[in-house]
Image 1 (cartoon, rainbow, N blue to C red):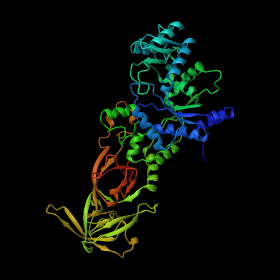
Image 2 (cartoon, helix red, strand yellow; image 1 turned 180 degrees about the horizontal axis):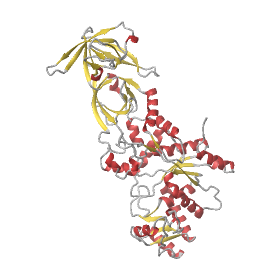
Image 3 (cartoon, rainbow, N blue to C red; image 1 turned 60 degrees about the horizontal axis):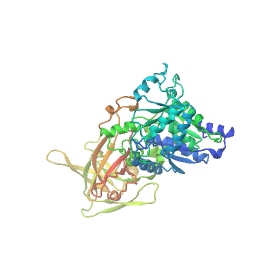
Image 4 (spheres, rainbow, N blue to C red; image 1 turned 180 degrees about the vertical axis):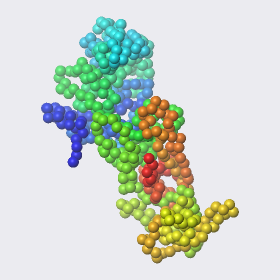
Length: 539
């Protein structure tokens, strides 16, 4: 039986109390200062799900209030990721669209005696805030007149002051145990070119000021964010009460839920940027990262990611999710859609003595048990199998190929190893085998994958392990010291000809190995595949 999460219960309670259902509205407000990661999917999924359930709009609003870090390339990447995940927004907005409205609302607070221009620097303001257990020190500029504050604020807007020379602060409570209420900064001077508004503005609203007011202006009913913004809630509500219009019946409320923490991973754009800067990963779309672009390049599917988010659910309790749960949903989906192919990594040559040297037998096999599409597999006198699938002297627990032992070749025939031919160094050169056509499958305990030596071709493989050597890298200060140096390994393998037509969007199961996809940097002369996930348990 479906159990409603606590946010659905809150919304249902609001509706029961008389809140108009048609006024429900939700948004996803990413900052365009990096790529989206798996943690963002939880927010996207939640807001989209609620919008769909209650038939309200789902708004994509870019929180672009910092010209130093924000770029249009991140806007493009974020929209691409959301579309790939399968979500659609009904309206696209930007915090910068509301810069003038925010400026007017700030003047409204000044006129109410609730905001003032502080001519102290950032360090002085921070020191005066003290700690939650100490009494804060009021700014010497806190009691400037409304007229003077309006004049100074306009001069800030007009570019009269230098960066860091003054800020606009809300006048709340310098003794509050919640440091967020100790006269927070609303505007700072940044003489930087904004990617969207260019050089029109030299003052920019802080997140604390812009976020809630944009919710108000867009008539968002339920503003959902993760628990690290819990202390912002009183400030969020205070600002809304100061600016509200008597005719506006929709006052947004902020509610917090637990963020997504995945072991062996980091869910922080700032920390991911550090890894990129230190060249510990290639870029935002490095397949080892939990970014959406990295997961897409690695070969993850939107369905598996959304099913994972759906299962972990929404709650207020912080927890760490085991990466194996994500891989479970990934394997489950890939098993349904991935084409089966045969690839040999460490080849050992078998020569089938009783098979014609010039003959090729074309075998027919389904690409997937759930599919009606077939592929052609060439069988010839010389084939490759994995070196680990042969043992010179059979042991009790070894059921693969050994001298005198019969095994079945996948989608092909029964063979028996007869003798070993070695080179001058004593290493195996090839194994002589005999082919049988009339032995029933049930008489053989092992089935080996293989490729024709004549028709196979070389491919390059990227193998990926966990990015960090510790389970919770987000909990340590010097997290980059724990990056796993062997998180990416490369190998060469030999594939059946079906893979020559591989496409980046297709997924493949390399039989008995794992799931793989073609990397975007591949070429027709150099096919490179990324391991999506192993068929073996890794952690």
